Amino acid sequence: MKKQVFLLAAIVCLASLTTIAQKSTKFVTGTVSYSKSTDVEATYAVSPTLGYYVTPKVSVGITGEIGKAGDTKTVNVGVFGRCDFMKVGKSCDVFSQVTLLNETSTVADVKTTEFNANLGLGANYLINSKWALTMHVADLISYESADGKYTTTIGFSGVENPFATAKFGVVYKF
Image 1: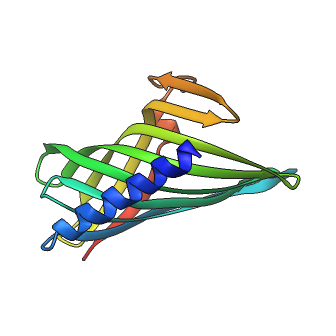
Image 2: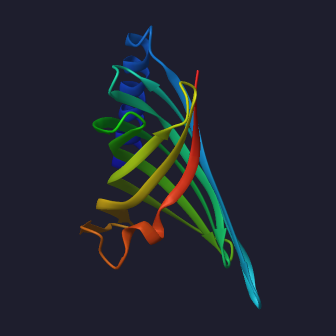
């Protein structure tokens, strides 16, 4: 119940912030991944995101993911806040992003629900004023709560190379 109230409060805050941003830039971004090996079922994930720049460096939005890995199907829905904190040259913006997600996983008709809070890093490489390439590296801080148990991870735990787990996509600003 606390998770649902927290998620609802985050959505209300997001809605109120987006009404403040009358002259904001809207953007849509997403990643798609697909992997298939011999004798292994295909793994895929589709992750769309819609956001609004509240200020030139701060954006808020909604995000989701639909995916399948082996016999596990997942559906994530959440909100995020992003801050572009560093400019590298004229074309690259580095950002940090806080994401609150509600994840539902189904394995053999058994559903489990988790609440996740993550702080991660990423970068956008600007192609022109409308298009950019994006990259999200592994999360720096992660909190997961399911069935009354929680896990907090700080650092790139279990990831030898955070760029090996990076997700790549495109950004369109309108």
